[in-house]
Length: 466
Image (cartoon, rainbow, N blue to C red):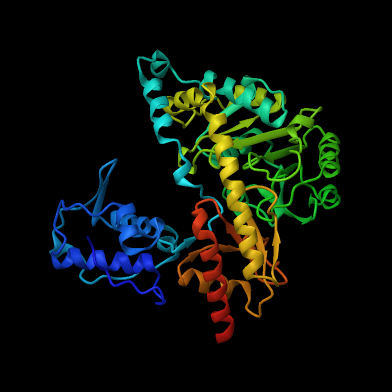
């Protein structure tokens, strides 16, 4: 067993204290090459700390080359030539490292790893590669037909949109899909993006040399009056759970958007349905695609939230006019997802395992969401929670004298991984009060209340020092 002297009252997060201790023990030679470290569960129980804390410390040591991780066996000390290893134990020096080795992860794009169906997924992969001649055939640029058929069925059953497998394009992440859309539309196309909104979307358009305009939001989503006054011909929206505000676009606003798209032949709506699987109250609102009678909606979905971000499988449904352009111009770009991964996912959906997994995740995240909201209301009675009806993140508006940027930076330095709402706004606009974007996907259920309590205490200390 390891015997680190961990101080929960220290400004140094527990994961970093443990990381520093193990690293120092390796340098001293007390932990020797090939020596196995205690299991995460055993060490967490021995030290009376969370498994996430152990995981963060171990994974940072793996990233730095001090440990190696062997599946189903554990963590082992690497064979190091220590004369070439920087002496001392160091600290995490930048925000990228802070994200990977956080004390509390409030990231909006993480999921609960404990829910991943490892056994079933391994079986699907074994079945996918077992004498399957499809894996050896010339791949279809749009992705495997079998998976596209299953996705079309899923979209119909879950989102009410009747689409053809021929309209579906499979990709590794949404970035490549956005690249394809850039090639499908005229060079003078102007994209309307939500403000605040997904900042990577604007960055992709900027890198691609495309003109884009931020359109402000109200409680119903993108303001269609502002959209109509703009030169935009493609409106990019997240109607099921707007990112990052969390608002859900009501039926009337959806109809307004569809009416706007019908006014010109070159106008389309790009609907990103990134986490529509997770709605916790009321009946699901139909997707824009299911209401699309004029074939004006480009529909995008992903398996990142409902299975895992590391799966890297996304898809889009093209209107028939754009599909024709795709077939004439873009089939030279092959599907970037491996045939075996596509086949495994097809089996996962076809056998009903995906539906069972989704039901389990919905129930689990619903419980997390309830505890998360109750804890926020308990520890931040003067704050305002927004966007908690769906998805895996929400906003916390604070009544604080601190400006948002200073608050977020200070919390990052204290070991929290989170972001502020201003990071997703167009340049020059800011929140009236500091607003945090808080995700709860990767938090343990029994740690949520304590994490929110610690967040409150650390903010209170920062305000007292202000």
